[in-house]
Length: 204
Image (cartoon, rainbow, N blue to C red):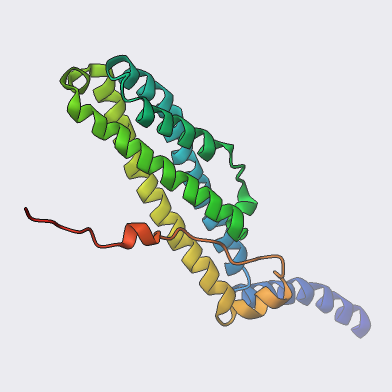
């Protein structure tokens, strides 16, 4: 009889012990790495969605400008080529842990941003284009998308900071070296040296 009671107690205590272990591990941050990794991946998806939205708006913008300013052929070509280059780079969830591919993606998007800025600036020389309702609507959508890109990048940078910090600090570093060896640090956006240069102001 005592033996039966002992077996019954063991069966009862086993789930409780497993539950206590699970709670203890959760308290030690064992879930932080995969949780933060998923948040960073979700933020990366949002970045890609916003860049895709911008890429889809550009052809209509180019066609509208072309109708009023065909002589701006160089600017139109630059935008078209920059868009083709930016959309030709294949990116997915693995891009964030591949420094070379991530840099190519970032550089291509920066090149497209510059070309797009020059295209928008062209409108200043063409009053008819500036007042065209289609151009104004597209310009507003592009500007709104640029703002969303900035927000998405900021959110991604913060999510990656939290995730990368977890990989390098205690107790996350213990879990990274045991349970989550496949989890690698993620890349983040940087500002190019060109963008960091202080603009020169010349007075005549």
